[in-house]
Amino acid sequence: MKTFHRIIALFISTASAADTPPVSASDLAARLSALQQDGESYVRLKMEVQQPAGTTKLALQLQIKQRRTKAGTDVVYQVLWPKERKGEAVLLRKAANKPATGALLVLPDTIRPLDASQMKEPLFGSDLSYADVLENFFTWEHQTIVGTEVVDRVNCQILESKPGKGQQSPYASVRSWVDTRRFVPLRVEKYTASGQLARRIDTTKVATGDNRRPIPANLSVHSRKGSLTELDGSRIKHDVNYGDHEFTPEGLKIMGVPRSTSE
Image 1: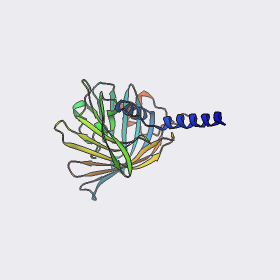
Image 2: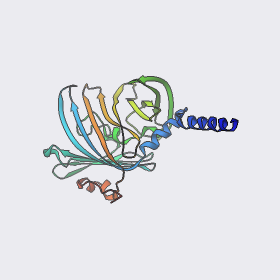
Image 3: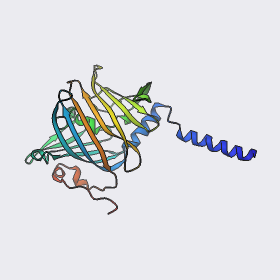
Image 4: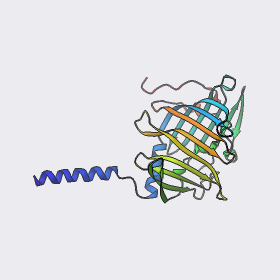
């Protein structure tokens, strides 16, 4: 009987340790970064820009092709709807600790290069900048837990991220309110060098992705100009395979859905 109780106690202790979230800022940032670096994926996204909040300025259906690894990030955003904007696209690329680059496809057939100085520009007129959809600030050198707070009845740790020497960003710091049970940021605030809040991103819906992990499916993006961007991107596929050419300026013209790796 004593042996049985020891086994049960050991099991409970082991299970509890496995469920315990990281206690250090570096561990928490590393876990969140690893979840972002999830390889190749495809997303269908609805984006609605309200300016002012409550008044629809524009609505877009987008598809996103992305490749996120430790070596770097490649993303392509393409407009599917409305018909008159179908084909507009942007490519964004960033290797580790190197300046971001990209290209913009302007209808009907003009490709314009983008460099690091343009990462503050808005994505298709929304409250998201190019940097917002490209950067992984959980890889930044300086990570600190600066407090705790309840967000939507969930206890969150507040993780502050700051870039180190050689890590370029339009932002001086980012604070993330992290649900450490599901490892999902429920709120993200991005600050300029002067300490002003540039953007606040709230997770309004957490869904289970195709890889059975919790993902921030719906987002609300608030900017200083008083507008609001609502994003619904719960449709995501990870079993896809891209060729390198799809993450080139000429690849912006490829509008097809990627094939599944299981096909």
